[in-house]
Length: 401
Ligand SMILES: Nc1ncnc2c1ncn2[C@@H]1O[C@H](COP(=O)(O)OP(=O)(O)OP(=O)(O)O)[C@@H](O)[C@H]1O
Ligand SMILES: [Mg+2]
Image (cartoon, rainbow, N blue to C red):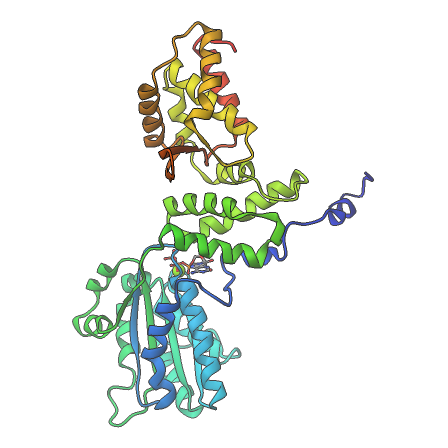
C-alpha cells in the first residue's frame, strides 16, 4: 500500500452505486406503498388542469414521522407541474418548510423568491408581499400550489397568514383562483388553534397517511437499496433484518441511515457484501445504550445463556439461530463453571425476558413436520462487542471464562 491515502481509497471497489440516493432529502422516482395517496392527490387536483384557474384546492395531510408525507408531496408537486407543462397550463409549485421559515414574512418572501429570484429581500410588509404575490400570479396567468410543510410551526406564529392564503381570491367576484394549498402536520389537533373558518376550510380534505407495515418497510428498503447499493452486496435476509429494526423505530430515515452506515462499515472491512454483523455495527451508533445497560443487571445463569447465543450466532452465517443449536454449548459452559444447566422451560422464560428488554428478538416460524420453532436474533449490538461486554460483566461478578 502506498501512502497516498486518496489514491488508495479511490482504488478500493465501492459497494455503492450512488451514495447520494440514501440521503434523507433525496426524492426517489418511485415511492412504493404511497401509490394510493398519490392517486388521491391527483384526483383532488385534476381540476387545476381541466379547468385552469377556476378552482382552488386546500388539502391537509397528517401522519406520523418518517412515513413519506414530505417525499410524497414533493413527488406529487413535480408530477403536477409536469402534467400542466405538457398542456401549456401555467402551474407552479413551491415547498415551504415552516419549521425553517417561521414567520409570515419569511414564508411569503420564500414563496415570492421561488417565482422571482431578484425580488428584494427587505422593505415590504407581509400585507405588501401578499399583494405582490397576487399581482405576479395574475400578470403571469399562473396558478401556484403552495405546500406548507410542518405547518404546526406556522400555526403557532402566524395563523393569520394561513387565513389570508386560503382566502386570497375569495373577496373578488368571479376572480380567478390562483392559489392551492397543501398543509402537512403530524398531529391533526394543532389546527384547533386556527380560526374557525380556516379550520373548516382545511378540514374539508384531510388525507391521513397510515404507518407502514413491516412488509411494506421491507419493500421500501429493497427499492432504496436497489438504487443505491450494488446488487450482489446485499440479500433479502439482510433487508429483512433492517426492516425489523425500522419497524420498531417507525421512521424510514432510520433505515436509510442504517443501510448507509452498514455499507460504509462493510467497505471499511473490505467486505464484498453486507452481513448481519455490518447491520449490528450500523445500528449500534444509532441506538441508545439502554440494552447494554440492561445486561449489567442479569444473573450469572442468564449471562451464560446469552453468551452461548452470541457465540453460536458468531459462528453462524445466518442472522438467526434456533434454541436447539445453542443447548450444546450452553451445557458445556455450565459444566466448566460447575453450574447446573437450567431446564428447557426455564431457558424459554429467559428468552422471553431478553426479548422484553430488547436484547434479542424471537421469531416464531411454522415448520411442516415439527410444528412451531423459535429463532433468536440479535440486531442491536455487534456480536464482537456484545461478547466482550458479557465477559466483562461476568468478570465483575467473579467469573472468568
Ligand atoms: N414509500 C417510500 N418509498 C421510498 N422512500 C420512502 C418512502 N417513504 C418514505 N421514504 C423516505 O423516507 C424518508 C422520510 O420520509 P419523509 O421525509 O417524507 O417523512 P415525513 O412523513 O415527512 O416525516 P416528518 O413528519 O418527520 O417530516 C425520506 O428520505 C423518504 O424519501
Ligand atoms: Mg416531512
